[in-house]
Amino acid sequence: MNRAAKIGIAGTCTALVVLGGIGAYNVVQAMSSGTAQNGETKAARGFDPTAVSSEPPSDAKAITLTRAFLDSWAKQQYGEAASHTDASATAASALRGYTGGLHLKSLAFTQVTSAGPSTVTTGATKVTFDVTARVAGGTWTYPSAVAVRQSTNGQLALHWNNSVLYPGLGDDQSLTAGKLPADAGTAKVVASDGRTDLARFSSLRDIVATIRKNATPAGGTPGTGVAVVDASGAGVKALKVFTKGKSPVIKTTIDASLQAVAENAVTDAHLQGKPAGTVALDWRTGHILALAHTGADGDIAINGIKSPGSTMKIITSAALFDQAGLTPNSPAPCTDSLTANSQVFHNDSGVTANPAATIAQSFTVSCNTGFIKDGFHYLVHDGDASALHDEAVNVFGMGSWSIGGGVATTDPSIPPDVQGGDQAAQFIGQGRVTATPLFLASVGATVRGVGFKQPVILPGQHQDTAPRPISARTANYLQSMMRTVAISGTAAPRLGGLAGVGAKTGTAEEGDHTNGWLTAYDSSIAVAALVEGGSTGVDSAGYVVRHLLTGA
Figure (tube, rainbow, N blue to C red):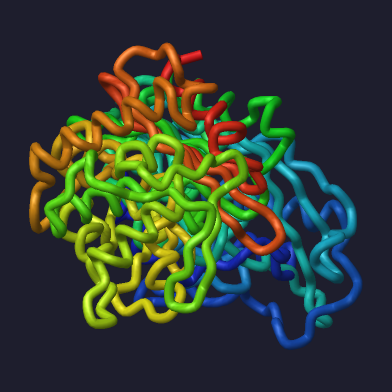
């Protein structure tokens, strides 16, 4: 609101109350002023507020008193008008505030009519009227009403409250006219094109509300009109708009076209209505391009914290390359079963044993036993199984991310102090290892972009860095293996034939069911998807990821 209006109404805010009725006053005495010598107005002469009659005054008397009040108000004779109320000092101050806040030029009242006994204020007669106010920016017309009561001595008064100024006006509220006050709730949260309102996408509605509340909008022009403001001058509600303004905007990294694809992808018919979540990133920048989810348990795209299954073999492989000096051609025997720390591990159905398998071959078919054997042998030392945690933190940037706008995300977890069977289970994304689609999309992006770029949803948002960039050697190894997975490995049924795609599938056990995962990238984006209850990664999350990579 403009400064002049704010100053004009500041003194009235705390003394105004919600519509309740209008105090009683003697019709003859109502015509006389209640102004004291010092200029301070007194309560209506003769009216006893402690002895209010239960009998409403007659229609004629109530109308006469109301007309006297309105005539004085229209002439800006605030003391005279206030003398017809049961709180003349408060009323006079509020009437002055009304004039100042609205930059009032003229005021007229018509259709002054009795509406009979008030249904709100016991023992009062309700009088209605129309108000026409010429204010800053235009003319404002609205209906209003007062209630007139009488005390047991027969004297009448209007019972003062804030609703005399405007119906329903709260006791800590006032009116302003001219430039409408800024209201952060009107800001539009838009896609990277600067135009598309993200509120249109069901998956983003909660995120949009959070960003609108926490981020700083830019641009926009105020409209003009009449508004209710609170005691601090902040906009509460626009009552009349003379000229429309332009909403300020908060620009995000979301790609509107890809977001539309993601919204459809998580409802693919192959998923049979199972909860699904997906995230797409620009692997060059870490910008979140799309984010979609279904299900009743919240946004599983950024908060669906689950065991990631064999997608974790990307980080396990990186640790074997970086910390053990292995290569894709190093042995990783794929046996039907393997015992580690007294726990027996098996492969998923369909994985054929190959005792002569290499890391690349075990990666392609997603052999659990090959990765448990190598991980447990090369990365666990004297009971210390923190190597996988260290790789995830130092190279893949695992930690507590802030993606911007106050949007909360759930952190992945690869504990550094795992014990017992979990020391082996972590290498295949089971045990105490947890992740989200957001994190796994970032893992794929780190491989393709040869470096970690922390995901963000607001351009310019601070991005954490990884302590150590992924080596070109390790990135090349992983890209080669993930490309083979997409062409001829576990992801081929969904992604085979797509140019430049690398991928890794995952199927994770959870209670009595499995969850399907898939992370992949192409020449421009990195994507990950989770389908709760998915039988395998390729036959559930694979459909979601294909939608994002093909834009279909």
